[in-house]
Length: 114
Length: 114
Image (cartoon, rainbow over all chains, first blue to last red; front, side, top):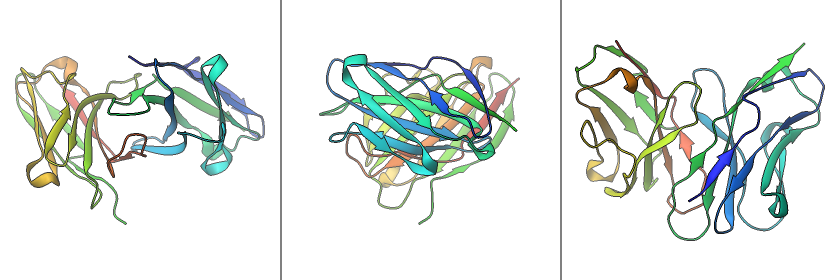
């Protein structure tokens, strides 16, 4: 069985500051990892995903994440926060190979302070 | 390309009543998912269809929840009878089909059970 832990249900950063949202996972086999963003009253939208290959993954809106197997982590970063980044962010994991359902973390709500 | 459509967007019912939600996935997407998102939590998979067959319904409370995907296109999720703890956002998502592929989410149906 797989699981996802997102540290910090709420994160506040100043506009222009570094954004760091933490995600740790557990999986008995190599995982596929995802970050989704949810804006108020909207569905989830994919930011980026890791399946195979390069461990540093670039996504939309300037976000990136690095898969670190030794740390079982997939933290999301953005060098400079923008007001429009205020949303809730979900990390998700599914084991590679064959069917397994996607497991979502509990989410981190990002607040950007002007 | 049209996104995932869901209706209604909002629903208020009293406990013990029944309710139904409708989802139309992206054209050509073989896999359809229903998630339950309770306030403050990440989405929890209720049921996953591959075409019109059920792949995973292990977390669907089958004594009160039912879902169908006739003809392998749109889908209906029903709750009968509703309980207070069913108050949540019900998200529908679709994907082309393979493990590790991006899921595309609809805007969700927000259900309040009084």
